[in-house]
Length: 112
Image (tube, rainbow, N blue to C red; front, side):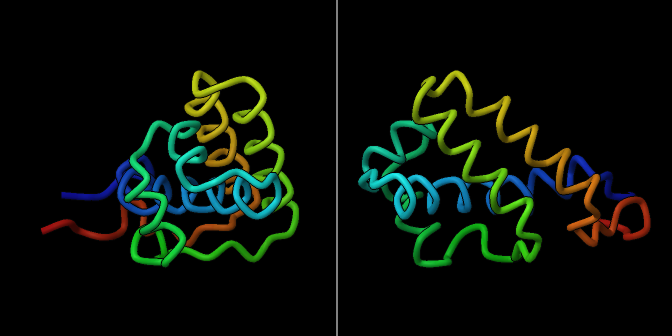
């Protein structure tokens, strides 16, 4: 079976985007791990795993524009609440695809 970009993003991109947003919330906006978890709708344990690079660590973002957009997303989620998480996650995913930040094995790799 071939892997679609959405499948790749669910398994690889989504954890990385959450990791980056959580790190931004904590490092740029001074939230605690517990507060970041509440804003993102995940457990404090998930935030701990993001910060310790045990989860969402298979993709690194090198593009500074995307890093700034992640910071903007973190700010929007903090200000507007968890209802904004999906919208901002999708926005970051689209930007990453437009900027070709991902080497997605889309439709070229078979899944066992």
